[in-house]
Length: 85
Image 1 (cartoon, rainbow, N blue to C red):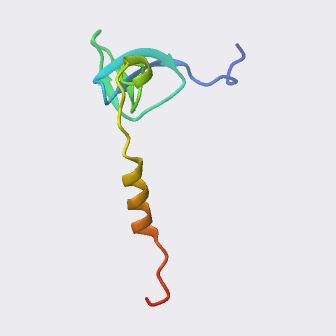
Image 2: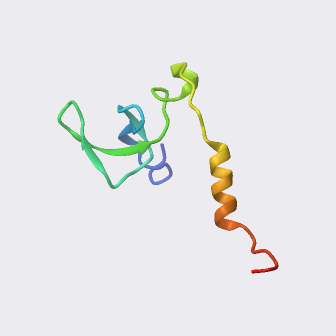
């Protein structure tokens, strides 16, 4: 590879917050947070909300999403004032 052409490729821990699952891989992603891994070394850690350990497609568990509540909350917060106000 040409020097200074490609980004730094290093070991990174990705941690799934929902499932409490973490895995060590190589990536160009960086993070200011670090974690001590099972081998005793310290690696940068990137927290993700969904991985194969928590995604409904892979786990077979369905998850209920309250979209109606979100829409109502949005409308209450950002509704236009009526002419009398």
